[in-house]
Image (cartoon, rainbow, N blue to C red):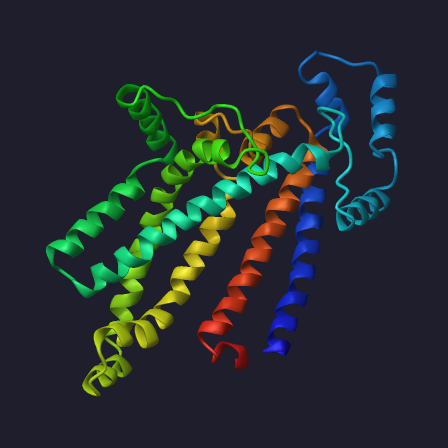
Length: 317
């Protein structure tokens, strides 16, 4: 097991390096000078002296290889440089937004898992009955309902029925847990329902496939009760594809909830992405891509560990 984990862990670093090379090159192959595009894009023109000073300020006057080496060394030390837009350290710009997006992602994942796994298992056990049809309708509705629209419906219902609106100013959990949960539980429910729809369908499909296997029939023939057949044999083997979906969706939630964040007035990483592109803040764009990519790679590593734990055959392949 330790050899398998070490191998998977070491594979993360060349992947991160590849992502760093790609985003660094893509930013620099944009037609025109990056600083000139940013400074003169909205105001019409900028003096050459101002452009040169800005290039020196952000180290863009140095050779490309040196720029890349400096940037990578900063990323290793979690120093992403200075924002072209605000002039503040990028780490400070991202820190609070990362905490907000991470909390929403975790809460939405909890909601999705609590809905998806029980519903998927029940639908598989009651295949082609009214229970199965009800679960399928529930999941299809989730796939067809955008999370931002569901968020708007939540806000309208709370306002019209209860004459109450969730807090619109973000409060960190460590400052006031109750106020924080009052604000974030609604986007978590809206996103978690959409998220659970995908996981429910995957759980149902995986369970149906596993329940037809010979070892399930053998376990039932030996007289094992249904609960033990499900917990010891069926569910554990059916969880591999479900975990893949859950892991990928969880990583996506970190920076992919732009519209939902705007509906609930949340200044998370998704909104910061849009703002960075709108303000042509290329250093911030590089940092955000690296953070989200690194998070995807970390989630994939955790999924690999979970695969090996659920199915011991994987670690020997």
